[in-house]
Amino acid sequence: MSTTDITMLIDTVKLEKMALAKRVGQFLVAEQVQEERATVENVARVLAQDVSAQVREVLAFELRKCKVLATDLAEKIAHDVESVSGAFLGETMVFTDKEWLKLIPGLKEPSLVVVARRKDLSETVQEKLATVGQEPTVTSLVRNDNLTLAEVACDKVVDRYSDNRRMMDHLGARADLPLKVVERIINNVSDHCREMLIEHYAVDQGVASKMTEDSKIEVLWAQLKNASPTQIHAFVTDLRNDRRLNYLLVIEITGRGCPTFMESSLALEAGLPLGRIREILTLEDPAAFVRLMQMANVSKSMAPRFLQLAKKFYGKTSNVTPIKDAVEDKAKDAVA
Figure 1 (cartoon, rainbow, N blue to C red):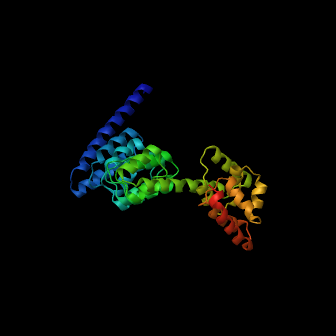
Figure 2: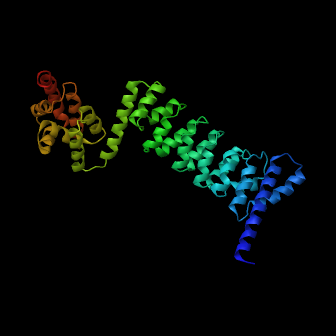
Figure 3: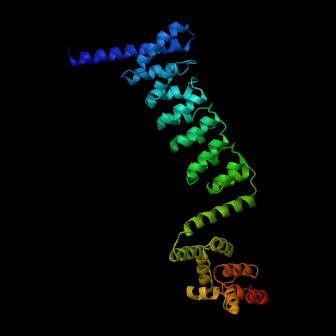
């Protein structure tokens, strides 16, 4: 027998198996007597292990409409390569929620993507997909407009991908988000997406602005809390050059435990060396402190707050009262 003859024989056998797989699948989709069904399911088990992916594809495609199917056979198909399992996983109704939760962690990413596009996913199944799936799966879930995305699933997505702007924009584009989720992501989306969220969910502009500002402070603090004095000074310099340095920010960051941030800010604004700023902040010379507030253009409403920070990080208790009096007496005329 020649090579050509062998190839033709193999092709013929494969075609016969594909035809058999189609008939077996169609038989099992229809309601049958249990004894006959059990016999045919055994044939299906053999076909589900066939070396030819095309044979397995035909079987899986037909069985996707099955209302009842042996668990081992259904799981065998589900764990096959995506070209075989895809159509089956996208439509089958044979798995309960409990079975889905058991099945999902063992599926490969392409198969999880297919599952994430289904329109009948329960809250628990959504949460499982958002937990174990990689970015393609989670993206498919978030962009699935055929279902209402559960809050637990949304929270899991934000927990895992809050730093992923693209994912947050996908999530923000949905029209069914709980307000709590909107509040969580409004600082993590693009400006365009934020505008859509504010408009669609009627988020107060003032609240949104405050949330955004709070988020920026958190990001800045994460960068500064373990930074060296040199690094902090560089941060402050960049902020000032970008016109993003303001005294509310200085007070917030300093109050969290970073007096170096205040030193650098006052030094740059007043045009004084850092060493001199530290001397003044010891509060040994009340007049020098007031002059520093003048030179740095600290407003009279802000000056007392800087005094409190100086007292906390540099000053001596005995010096506080005369300095406070000096600030209150001189700030009205001396500080803008």
